[in-house]
Image (cartoon, rainbow, N blue to C red; front, side, top):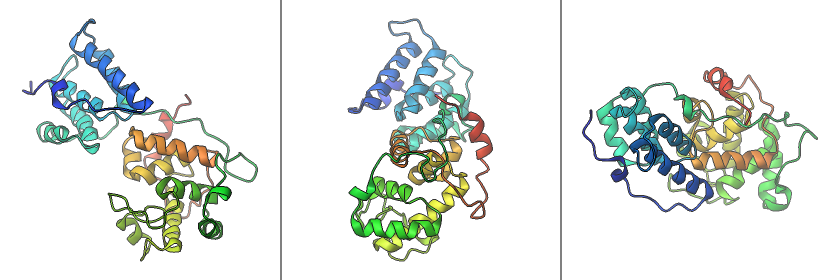
Length: 293
């Protein structure tokens, strides 16, 4: 068994303000009680289930604690590959202790543990004229210049203007000079690699930025065959994360982002051009796991 400090001592408790954060903290505390038999009978299986629910709400400490359980064989057979998977997820959310643990347990498993495969929301009708009512009126909210650019350019890239406007609103709130701490730039928050990929020379120029963002959205729509939830998740977290988690990644920020985009667009399915790119090989694995809540 690996010699480690107790899980509760690894990281201090963080202030949590949102309802999801509070719920995740409550689930994690219940899991700790059942893991260690604190005031309740020890129940490793229930502890793992509760930790997984907290992890799906975006709690990095729950990922870490799951890694701890499998790294030490606490109530389950020791499984370094599964431990590494959970440590890797915690490390991706900024936990330094998880980075250290990855050096001990080695390479992660390649498939997603069953408890971390979040169900998909129910599929909606295809996005077309009169199919559904968008949740946000960007005609009234978007600056006139940006609205005109999107309305003119989006059809050229086979992207519904409502989707493009929803992404712009979520990414930059229509600020063409927006710059994130991760160096995402402009209206559609293009990182330098994406700007280069879609030949955007000046990401702070509104027209160039929108053109690059639309090109990326067109590619994502083809890659995920018009699934708006997956497209939004990939725009926020990267297509690799969507494939790795076989759906929307269990990050609170990403899940809230997806909900916002889907709500704004008003449907879950968007027309796509299959000639743009081949679909993601992971779709065959993602779709069987899609369940209606």
